[in-house]
Length: 519
Image 1: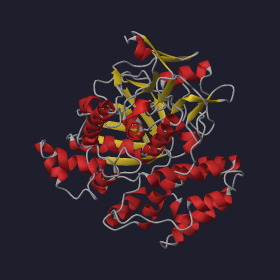
Image 2 (image 1 turned 60 degrees about the vertical axis):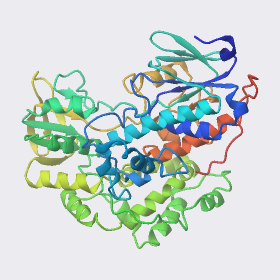
Image 3 (image 1 turned 180 degrees about the vertical axis):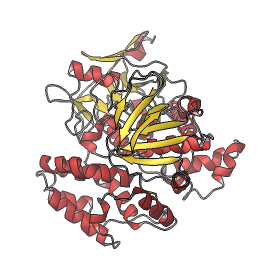
Image 4 (image 1 turned 120 degrees about the vertical axis):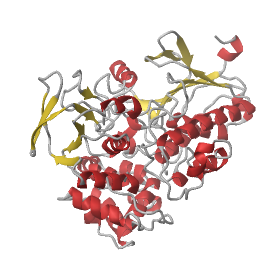
């Protein structure tokens, strides 16, 4: 496999090669010193044939749009122009990208597979940049089945075992939870992705039930429409509300009250926890600067259709409260960490769903398509928990307040599970939980050290050489569904690992230098 000189190098294993991996490697390579490169080896484990896109941005239907404009999409925590610059450059050689690159990228919602192409290119360019510094990054085309901890980490794949000194978990989103125990039924789809393979074969159905009403459910409904589906679609969810519609982009909001300095002052430099009332005062004051009443932010609509019409009609205007919420990306993790446990519980029970719905609005193009489908009777929004009957082999029936309907197919579009509670949620993380390498965070995901992303084990000790990125850290960082947030955390982990790497071949594994918690 490797000669003795290679075996002596400090080895970092990155599990998964999606957006989180690309962001981590980018920041690692940018800050890497040549003396460190000579003592370092990186292995990336990815079973998919193309490294970079991951599941979220894989090759799929063009109907699947980014929910942020092209100009704000990046894997860099400091340079938001990486994707837009790539689009303009790539369009000189790829004719099919010219209409996209010619659009106003500050307002264009690009298909997710196009961003996946960018990630694949950016990944390859990062490998080239690493090679120029003397660092080889090897891609192992295999899924990791297990991680064991000894004097080094043992990485287990179907056909081989590998050793590493440090591991970065970039495993992507957890699987969706089967809330109604429909798994195994021939007419149940546990996930809609990839849409091209899973949804297109359903075009002959008369009626389809989609569990959920968030962005994944919107993907399903819009994709069916664009594929020419003529049957009926019911989006069934407890709240019955669709995502908000993103307003027109404008100059970024500059926070005056909800700032790092204010949080540091309230928490006495992190020495004490603050209550929700104190944090709420900062948010209310920030929203007042744009003339918005904070109470409207968390108010559920009694009429989702009326809200969709109003949001769609206003989407051509600048939505100031959305700009305020976008500005909270700089402080949301710190604010969450500063809250006391009781306040965090209140947030999770009463406000988290509304916050996340408002922080991830859908593009106006999708909202208009949904509105057209509703107005012509093809799409219905059904509120409440359905009761499913799976006794028939060729259909699944559901009873809601609207009555009982027989569906040809039921599609689970509820998004990622909050926790890893079964092997289906994430087989690798489940194994780590069973072996005590990780522990369940009661707020979501697995417990990690806030400042470093180090995974906390069954002995309540952070493992400085085992880091985690993305959805599985949602309990510690609250809002991790945005690639911008993942890039921030990736930079933090990369900088922290580089601060502790050996030089000139010395294999020294020590305590990390803690980086500031500021985003």
